[in-house]
Length: 455
Image 1 (cartoon, rainbow, N blue to C red):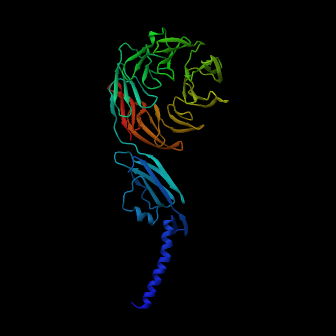
Image 2: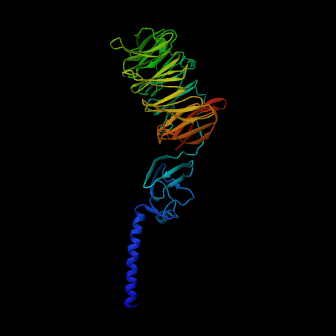
Image 3: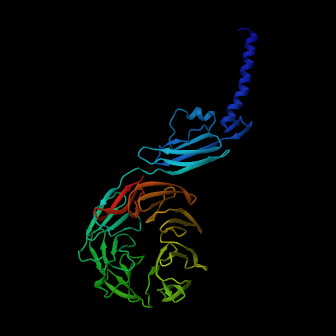
């Protein structure tokens, strides 16, 4: 090779280096050149995580990335978790697939220079329900700590461990009559979840550990009991509403004392030694907060007229549900403005926290969060129950023929997935790890208890 050729080759290599190196650096830095309009644009990054992991990732058939994407990702299956670089700004049809799970679909948009993080994607498992209890279920009730589910039948009380699905069955006396109280609820967990009150014609307290009866309430009080509740600080004290008087029963010392005698004829709540109950006249109602330590009224909160209602609490808030008009009042009894909000068209509700409430009626599901009311969905089939799934902001609900899950984004509807086609489900409950859904449904002319694996 002559000196001239070597010099020419040397100059070519230098020019090639001077041109190619900035070009590679330019693309590696996340830029792309648009040949259509001759402009530069920044590419984007998509970060994906899913539960479970190792889900295959697809972005549609259209080429929407620069040549460096092909260099790193072409001819290999992309699985979560993954960080995809050099995506061109555009709209994508994201699909995640995994064997034995429902496909996940979502429309996403990548903007210039954007890093889009989707780190809470949940895939739901394809499965078929298993029969857990093949008896006629009267009621199910989850424990306060979420670790157990109590299932009541005419002849037994079953305690399901929601971590491992183990069942402890406590036989019941055949004479116990569950046609009971006006409010309808039969199962009341004690504060520590070590005891259960069964609210029958003859209310009975069971010890969950040994299955023994600790108290038969009618051994201490005579007459028609209108309501009965646990002391929220004690597994050994019950408050009993009878003829306008509230009694306190200590099931250890077997003593019964009048706790409040000022004519409480409606549903009540006792929290931190305060009694909350409603006084009514022809035009309005007043929520009375009574301090039973000092025997004095601590607060009076004026409300519209309420006839039938139920009262409950979540942390520092009081929830007053007007079942006549389907209105839920959220009350902070110690605030200068105690009536924090009122929610309309509330057939049933669950308080996720004192600032977040999931509620529904026959055809709508709503989410109240931080003072904002969002309509999540409206359907033509009656809704039985809705529950909050904490993994990735999901709502599971059952309509007349289906069990469905809604994915939310910033508290608003994003997508819906049908988990199961199954008629007449009710009483939805999540397991301790949120990987099973329990529900009651017809079974051989009975109402059996089923479990469905979802993750």
